[in-house]
Length: 263
Image 1 (cartoon, rainbow, N blue to C red):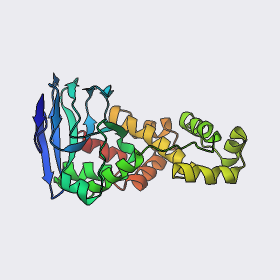
Image 2 (tube, one colour):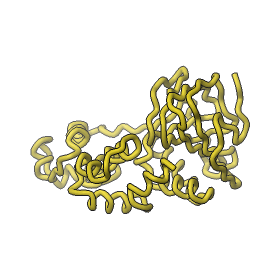
Image 3 (cartoon, rainbow, N blue to C red):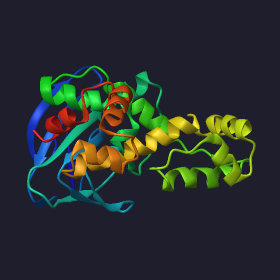
Image 4 (cartoon, rainbow, N blue to C red):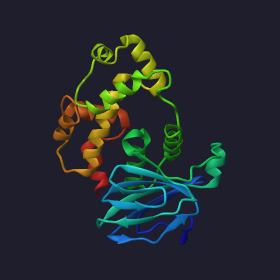
């Protein structure tokens, strides 16, 4: 089994940035399969383009663009890259960073999430690809750890599972508090208050997050027009999607962002 040292990644390098606590390195991969390996430092890998199979004792899955995986330095895995020009962005954290932020428990199993759930990752991607420099990489991982802490969300609110199921499966519908409360048999104001306390955001914000999640999947993985993406994801129109995208991620338009990750 290979152990990759600091800053060492498979494939060809397309960019590099380093400071006292972390480094970022872009990697490009052609069709190939690696040997089993692990890294000297824990890192967060973001897939921007192409696809690969993640293989380990704890995770076997096909990884699609817009997916991010945190791998600890104890995690042994290998990858099969199924497309030429597969493009990854890797954020590697050294031990000083973990000490600074008082993070002493790092999961050995990989953590998988989607880019669209983290505001700052969009700025990291655009700054790194355009300028080989970033300012906010620490924020993304702190948020990532917080979002992946185990919580018993539905304790004392059994109707909450039904409510989130409705919102998750009816993304194109704009629900009112009244219509939702009638379906889960809970008073509207109480429902809204408990939802925010348990989930961390309001019902309206949750609906927007789901629409953005669906839109971002298409943005990363399809050639659909921005208009079609907007409508298919439940936004009123293209302008509504663009305004929401910019407000959420604080970067350029969806079309400009797509051009950058595909460059």
